[in-house]
Image (cartoon, rainbow, N blue to C red; front, side):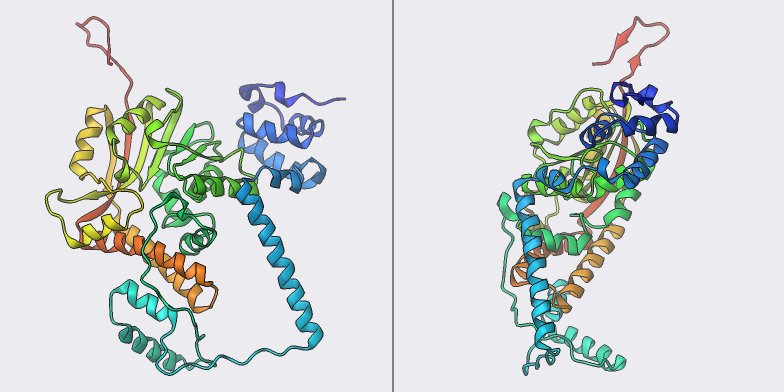
Length: 435
């Protein structure tokens, strides 16, 4: 007996369908139809789990790898080919060494007066003399009595300044960014911070959710998986959005958590569609914040949630050298507001603030933790010359942000506000709808 055509069943009816009938319907579908089902229907947690088990047990129902790769961006397909080429080259080198009986090379000799790259980077980040870091390292090294010397790196540090063009997202910079913040992430805190930020939203699988600052999409995907959402990710830097969506494709989450490019000044979200919209560390660089917050308000349902984090000034009238250095290091022109300015504008636009908190200390800790991960990678010799250049470029921006935040003139605000599209009616008044 043929199973139910699941694509002809509405979401509500599908949600009530017994698991056995649902699986029977899957048996009659081809891989493309199953992908379409996941894209067009919001499955319950039980149905999603049943589908995962079904695909695991029926490999022929999964979209084949070549077909999946064909959905990658042109850059993503080229990247996959480079990965395969590197893997093949590494395998050939391994085989050649085995055939020749190659022995492990001796540890490189340390040049007199040489200071390892990771020590230079640490001193640069902390703003201290390199000899202070060198001495601290030597003391710890001697106390632990390691079996061999630390690696000798021949890469030197140049005085590299950030490139502000939109082509700044080279492969090397993408790799370095993920060393700093975690695979698939381009902002501090990784999965834990992303999920912590949205906790107050009380998200449910039936909610519609948009992330207007997806970056590499790590937070977007983490939220989608944690709350079983079918959400929309948006990113204003095109190279970044392409790469982010490629990662979603590789993780088979491009239907559940796609990432697309958009222009901030031309935001065209469907009116009254979303239960929640999130923006991370981006509003400070938007020229017309009021217009964007108005557009978001129209896209939210009544009682819909706006969640954002943003860099804010503690005093608009007091500029410092540290703040000036921060502005100069940002890839987009910084136009930050103060907390009071945000409060007033949100009130004017009929948002009701639920959470308004300073999360700077946690954020700075995440930045420093990411930098420690980068130093570990440098110490282990995992970075090419191009990656070191990219690390310096990325580090310039994050060092400037960190110093401004720690000085106290710049803070990171977390705000959760609810929009109200209510009928305003008093018992003695004629019916009046707010504009």
